[in-house]
Length: 350
Image (cartoon, rainbow, N blue to C red; front, side, top):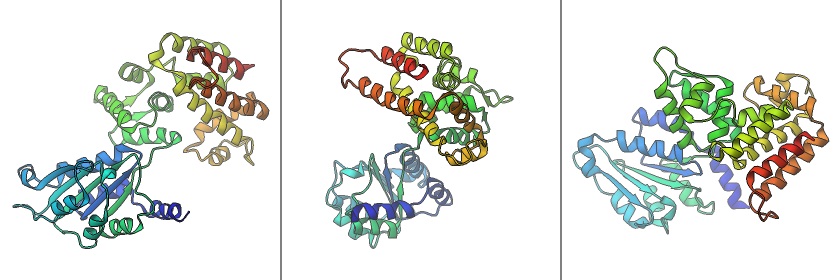
């Protein structure tokens, strides 16, 4: 219990990606950067920036070292960190797979009096520091930067997409945003790669991302996608929903039950919460109740409350869980994913 409480304290005092990058670009370097978390995207962005920008190209041969946690121990990292740079203001040491470094006591001791000329970057992906290593965490925080890269929540993807494009002088409509979010998901490395591909395709005089651009560049049909399926379900458009399911059954590479189930579960879960909103007749109040970025998205929940009773929503959520279990092979020896999806759609509408 104490370990979990301590991790909560770390999370509360953690710095943000933006603040780390702001200081780096201002060349306000710290002796250590411990980059950890489930989202590899931000860890790679920070460590790559340090690798490419702290030293001049001619300085890197003698002053930039990449180590792997599975190949070295903490004492060897400390020995490297204690070296002085050669004809350079700094030396950079990047330790990948830092979670594999055993017995961190030498590092903990080093961090209490780190070399001012060494920038040590520890990359710890797919997890965080063991909460019981309190002194180690404390030493990192006092010496430098402890950054946790958290997975982006599904509901935050549209805002991320819009912000990413806006900083690159492009705009996108809500439908296109949701199509991309639903089809690619929260893998930020893949998502930004696809967005970069879209950006390269835009002409200089028209920097708008539309459903047609998404279809042409990412390969997601503007008519048969997760956004259109959800829209058909929200509005009880049985014909359209079945057309989309048939399309995906015939084109499995275009989409699958594994991507649609989380999307539908999130919608009906929020729809259930909508019934408890004190002012569910107000689009603005409902958006605030659901912690949505803008009132625009609340319209689907107001429509959903007109088309589905609270009891039916509870039954649908239960059915989605059942189908999810079957899609993973539980109590389902041979029903294919396409048939499971048809079963779910039939249940939702009847």
